[in-house]
Image (tube, rainbow, N blue to C red):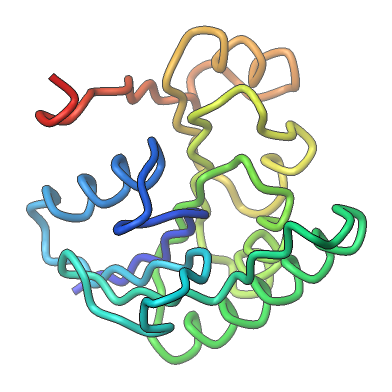
Length: 173
């Protein structure tokens, strides 16, 4: 069985594009994969929980009241610590990260230390090109041509970009 560490800021019962995309991804994967999802803490939800066949670690605090200059380094340290623990304890084979948070630097450090491939999933234009080039990255997932172009302008070879278009789930109809 392979073990995948997945990072997304939000996950159900939170709602939004990332929560829907990643929960659908986990529910529809046919292979025997052990998913570990690091996401944002949600009041009323258990910090460690099982959902959709994955183990959730709701550990990123919501710090809206803190200035971003303080919030970002705290998130980096939390993501670094939790990902190090999970990589060691769960023998993670691959890290798959939503790319829109600067805190993913913590994941890149873990991937680099343990030489674990990391995939950056660029689902919105807000990703930071200098951040998504960190770590042993094999491929980058993109959801649209404007994302492809931004990656290419920042030195990512076209042949290492894989297009995964946004597919609306049934309830959006």
